Image (cartoon, rainbow over all chains, first blue to last red; front, side):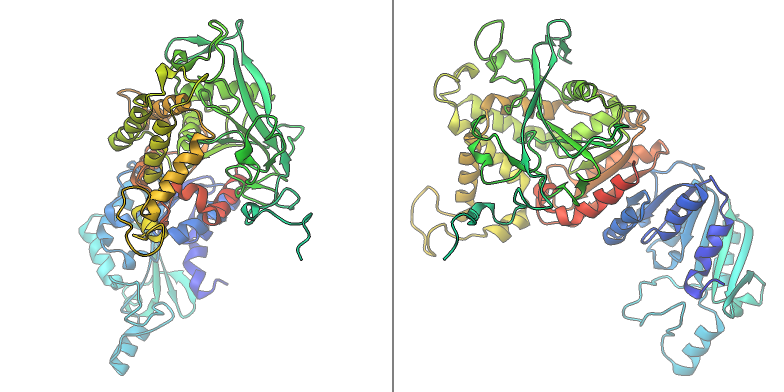
Amino acid sequence: MANHKRWDHCLIYKLIEPGSSVLDLGCGGGELLARLVKQKQVCGQAVEADPGRVGEAICAGVDVYQKDMDRGLPEFKTGSFDYVVLEKTLQVLYRPMVVMEEMLRIGKSCIVTFPNFNYREVVDTLKSTGRMPVTSSLPYQWYETPNIHLFTLFDFLDWVDEHGVGIVDGYAWSNNRSRPVDLPADSREAEELLFVLRK
Amino acid sequence: MTDPLNAVSEKKKGHDLPDSPRSVGWTRPVRALLADEDNPLPLDCGENLYPVTVEFETYGKLTAAKDNAVFILHALSGDAHAAGWDAEWKKYKRPWRKDRPGWWDEMIGPGKAFDTSRYFVVCANLLGSCYGTTGPWETNPRTGKPYGLDFPVVTVEDWVRLHVRLQDYLGIEKFLAVAGGSLGGQQALAWAVNYPDRIRSAVIMAASARIGAQGLAFNAVGREAILSDPCFDEGQYYQNEPPRCGLELARMLGHITYLSQRSMEGKFGRRFQNGTEPGYRLNNEFCVESYLEHQGRSFVRRFDANSYLYLTRAMDYYDAAGIGGGLEAACSAIKARLLLVSFSSDWLYPPEDTREVAKAMLANKKPVSYIEILSDYGHDAFLLETDKTSPLVASFLGRCG
């Protein structure tokens, strides 16, 4: 059983076809891609902005390109990867929509995961305490959070709809387990979400 | 009381001594004749050069399959003595090697980034340099005099062409990796572009596809300092006084480009060389002046002015994209895995220039690693930030085998 922190990691690992090409945006220490390269023989490339994490990813054995994605990704050609992965990164970007558009251009399929700000525990904490919620998916105090663009499942679906993006697959992390997304209930029930998109 | 037999020279402190388990120990240069009249070396300038001797060193053991060889590429003022302690410094009159190990000793040795208990490490001196490989200092067999300025203008591609002969001489079909910083990084890129089937990977540090106008300008002034020295004598100074002042000036200028503003502030600031009061004199007053002068003076004792002219010119000419060509097209030939390392305060080969190579690789759908290491050491960081680069290089090499 996947634990909370890694549920999307495990699911992405399952969803990706062996031998495919994968671009991992915001790869952190490169654990996911390293595993995909080693065990599923994918042809992987990672992008990461933080030089410390880039170093870790190189040491983990992945090819990683240091770059601040908010400046776009013109060095990657259109349709050049089978999958582009953006794992819990959208909410920390300055220009999340630039990156979304870029990933949909570069990847034949895109896998995005994010925390849902309308998750009942988040909203209830906010309402009952009157303070910014600190939860397992949003584990930061307001003054130290990297999450500068928090949003909800519906916000995400609106954007997807407005941009003519197709949803191929959707999963939710809810009640400590992962399952196919359930709309509209997951607006409040999903703590985190994973979508497979196609332009 | 210190035991004089065990006393270590102050200068040697901080280095891995020859008996250290992390040192490659005592080293000896080797020379090989790699071009002769029957098999001259074709150069980009159109000339066919012979004879050509190459000085090189090796550390570690080559496997029976000859698949663990790593070729280290030196920069402008470097030599084949990349690691360990030269057992023959007296024989070749290289006293500066007495108290210090090879120039990349912190990276090469048992358990180090270029782990000599796993890899067979080779380093060779460049054509046109002055450390045992044929250069302008050598006697031209056709005139009986040193070549001086009759030495042909050589290029980075010529160096690589010659070193491929060394690779053949050693019976190695593919290097596991070629690696270098600065001008050494440019050679690594030239290997990847021009000899894609002869290497598996390349480590390119503090280097890019070409130097810009600013770099060309600094090299031009350095050469001008040498050429205008009254002792230069059209490059035929070998029987007399060499152009020390000119070479010293060139080196001083070079050193400014190797440091960063911040590292200079940190190292010297505005401190006076002697005391805390101004001496109201024109020479050697501030610490930074004294440092540059020291660097210049020690350089002229170990380097040849003509070699400086030739090597900087090769650095000028190098452009991985070729004349009028594109870098993306040039990189399409690359089969090697690349690790590109830049340093944030390097203004001779700025990170954005190194990134261009990464972008060209990505545009060709080729995997690449590119990292910009935060450092105040400027261009010199590739020699100094070994704590930060070692784990990257070690794990990169580990998966290129």
